[in-house]
Image (cartoon, rainbow, N blue to C red; front, side):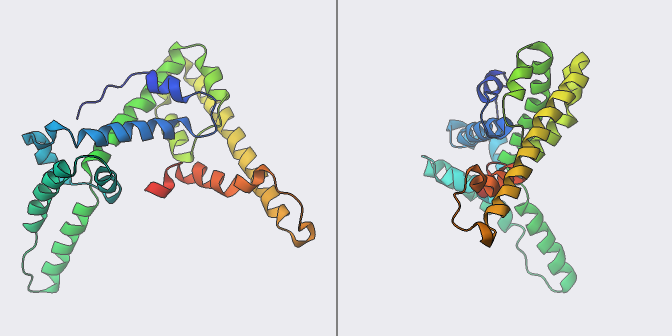
Length: 227
């Protein structure tokens, strides 16, 4: 599936918001890629072959089902069903049963949209580093935000070499943004626990009331509930 990797989404999402900007980028890319599987090209030979081989994960199938073209989805579901049915054969012993079970379960672990999403996100991790190296104001954009979820912080570290001669500065900037997020989260969780001490019953609770949601967003990503 075609998808252009540019810098527009990076500029739009590194805007000082509280949510991990890479989570926001991933959500936008995910939606665009998913929508392509309900377009006119879904029954092209190469697309059908990929859907036959990889299918969809449960989350992406639910997302596709919520969209406009039920016919397009039904056609793809039919091709995938035919492929999986070929793996359903009578088994005569535990060895054959285990082999068939493993093949069926392996098929449940793949998703054509997840495959392309992962590929595109790698390109975004690289491009974010390149933007840092080429755009002098981008450092302030990173620092004005609220850091990243743990997964995306790690991915940005992994591809930091794409910042070229500014790699060390880029790493220092990422660390500064992330350490602030983690320290703020630590403080909010501590205050949340303190507010639930029986000796402080009745005292008003502040921003720390969101600390568990912030923990979820930080450790599991802002779309954790949709996975």
